[in-house]
Length: 365
Image (cartoon, rainbow, N blue to C red; front, side):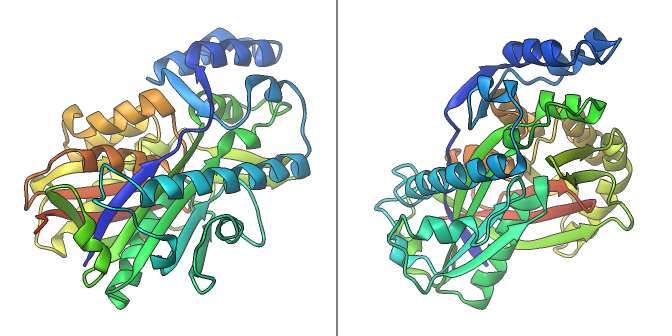
């Protein structure tokens, strides 16, 4: 098994209320949609009150080349990664004393909203005193599923190397992909939903020296994970890569797919551990949107209390793609959970795919 030792989140600096982004969208799109007032209801109906962005609102009033967007992504993603890693390794909420960068064996870096070679974690390592021998595992293209997938890869590494300490760093600057000239409904819906976010989790193996520094009375253990791909579903979610950059693909069928596809997928996974859905007490769900959360509840027969933390993150941060599920995890970790409780981390993303992680809380000795 592996323990989740610390989690941190770093909201980008520009906070915008949903009313402000609604007015901006109306200004930009009203000449192109006769039913603009009806479409703008997606901004108010999505249960998002505010979001954080990496750049100010005026940045979106001008066109930017793919190179300009991507250069901005590299610069800011590196800067934000440095900050969120510092917070994770020096957390006075989860750690009795800090963890040094030199103690990290592997960095799993997750992002799908920009391109960089060398990847962002290499640039981050030049800013922080990591060992030059730290293994690097960049993951690209998993979108909203990336946070849970990154935790799965960290768990597997710690099973293979029980002394290891693995950092999972998720950075998404979705706003930098915004297409001013794209007049599709997908782009308008994406503008109502997506935002920027940065998160980091420290996962340690059973024999890691770091475990003795855990501060909370209980710790979440990762018991296992599952990845499932829906065949021939590339058009459900993802990017269309064009000369002007990354254009969002976001099918209106996603909630309906979740209602019919998710439950048997989850039940098969839990049966491996002789568990049922009724035994899950913490649902650490990526809040893809209001309709996605409602589809989760319907598919899994969960009450809205099970998605309370996910709704709170959606309300104050929007859908940040891969980091979002770690924001939810951070809220759960700040709770004092009873030993023995089971949790399920769930995130869905391009593929179309699901990433599931089974967690159980254990008393810290």
